[in-house]
Amino acid sequence: MSRSYTVRTYGCQMNVHDSERMAGLLEDAGYARAEDPDAADVVVFNTCAVRENADNKLYGNLGHLRPRKQANPDMQIAVGGCLAQKDRDTITRKAPWVDVVFGTHNVHALPTLLERARHNEAAEVEIAESLEVFPSTLPARRESAYAGWVSISVGCNNTCTFCIVPSLRGKERDRRPGDVLSEVQALAADGVLEVTLLGQNVNAYGQDFSEGAGDRSAFSKLLRACGGVEGLERVRFTSPHPRDFTSDVIAAMAETPNVCPQLHMPLQSGSDDVLRRMRRSYRSERFLRILSDVRASIPHAAISTDIIVGFPGETEQDFQDTLDVVRESRFSQAFTFQYSTRPGTPAADLPDQLPKQVVQERYERLVALQEEISFEENRAQEGREVELLVSTGEGRKDGATRRLTGRARDGRLVHFAPGDTTGIRPGDLVTVTVDRGAPHHLIADGGVHTHRRTRAGDAAEAGSRPTGAPTTLGLPGFGTPPPEPAASGCGVPATTSGDAR
Image (tube, rainbow, N blue to C red):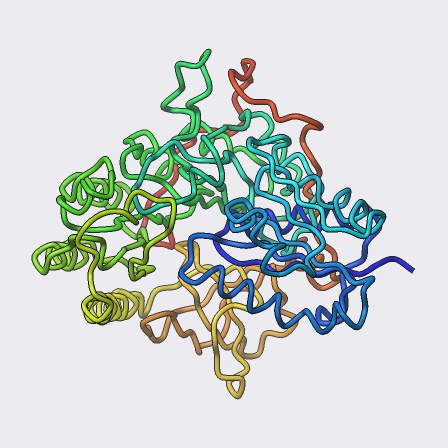
């Protein structure tokens, strides 16, 4: 019998995508996904070092597994991801029952390290200092039949003082456009309707191109090229950086029909002084101008953001500046964080670290303001007809209503009553009219106007998943790409009427 596995994921979308690769590697090596995750023969933790108390959460979970490991020495525990890259030997010192520790640069080594640990009956710790194999060249077990992650770059060249990602993921390295499009096309051929292009700083894509000089329009070209992929109905991307956000990207979003009217644009702070100490290379005026330009071209765009409260030295006036930018920006959603020190980051050594109670009080004021704005923005959606990609496992809904859930093209979560329509499956497309807006979702109880069955829905119903076949083998293809013909259908202007665009 094959050994069973489970992967527990913490952190960002990049970690979720890496976990799909880990699962694909294990299945390619003969492991089977555990029907009961709590009884898996191999437990893999894909960790995050950005979230507060990430290490406490990991060691707590490892502690819960210790009795299982003692009762069954053949069980294996592996720890990978950002925290593994950072802590290295600390993990096996604090949790000596861990079998394998691997980093962000050598995900491909996981099956080999597990086998070596079994053979040697000793922990295997292997942390590479630079990327060895681009993750997207690895096999994957995709979690969704209808939506897929596609990594276009790894690493980051920014030096934000609060962020530890560059030291854990390395400098930015970009995939060749042809390799990215091959993966997108492979997913679409498998019936996937939506892809999300991933990068630590996604719109800086292209820095390695043109013989090292970089191609500043590479990302907008990639968006337009995705518009020519047959069967692909939705394209999203995350996360851009305001410094690199240019007018050609806005034009590509507005003029490419399958690029969704959604933008996640991290603000971090509305205070120019705080942005300077964060080493964020834009100021609030530049940020607001980007949002204005986006809305001028894409009137119904839903814009979300990230905000950090309580950065060292933040004054009450700095915080008020953040509230002012939030009021003007009218974000549909904001991911808000209380600053906490991250050892190894420059901000950890800055003076004027704020008391916890001050940070907490400001955080609560920010959340209250954003909740009010989100509620108003969602109420403004009432009466609109929207197209939904039916999803599964998203958001909380009242089971008594038997509502289903889907995502609108602008990314908003919609709980809807199917009415008399039967046979609606995850991956199908429906249209509904929004009846009511809530702070975090929309409600549509008037029934379904149209229902389109899709190949993605067929796959979800059958329990199958796209393969996400590797686009290249071995070492990643970095640097200047060869000339490529433009994808068919690129650059065709989209109509920007009052629908979900």
